[in-house]
Length: 126
Image (cartoon, rainbow, N blue to C red; front, side, top):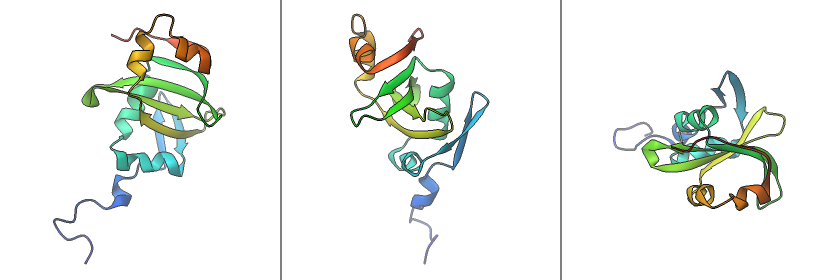
């Protein structure tokens, strides 16, 4: 029987919703992004990064995909989350915890960001 006590939440319940609104903009989540709920990434964390980002720019990932990319600190995880948005600003493509982001932000001149991204903006990371 499904739904019995002790089974834990179903995988569908841990998936993120179809849309997230942050900063007054509602975006669809790709199926890939919706599955990030299974990895412990929450709507609140994504919304926080999109509204309170530390760095953002138009960036190219290791696979050559180009997105509006945001990095922000997630206090409850003591980590930085990277959120990638489609260039048309309609879809959240993916989100993942970025263990190297703090180190790359602290690096003199932030060369990693300048090599992969354009139209970069940085906010105080305190």
